[in-house]
Length: 165
Ligand SMILES: [Zn+2]
Image 1 (cartoon, rainbow, N blue to C red):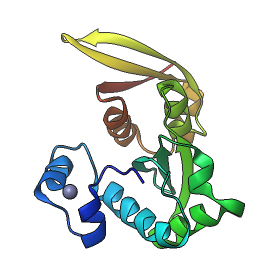
Image 2 (spheres, protein in one colour):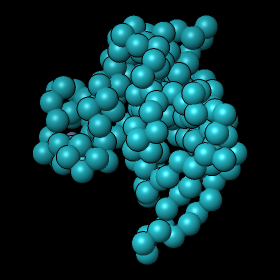
Image 3 (cartoon, rainbow, N blue to C red):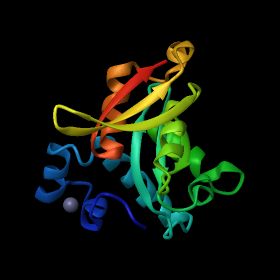
């Protein structure tokens, strides 16, 4: 099973210095570690060894779990796996695939707000990603604008600005 945390940390439940550094740098979050640990335990009972857990994103009412593999594997038969994750986290969980298609992943994150498109632009000499959303959908964003920009920045690994049209 692939996770952002190293295997020995999953076993021990403690973060090694190199994974601690990932958290300090913002490349990984405490939530990623928590979800990775839950998946590690679930893997004892259900075989999800082929799962590829990429990132967990707290969207307030729901935690979005991004996988680089098939979403179906982390959903499980009749949703068994996803409901185990959900009861361990004490929150609703949604599984989405983070494939090469960043646009689709962003659309999944901002849902039920609709994504109009993505543009790349330069701002003060740095490339930024502009995420275009319909002005009428501001009320439908899963998080406030600042938090959402932070979440998307960690995903696309460059500055993100939400633009409402
Ligand atoms: Zn580690």
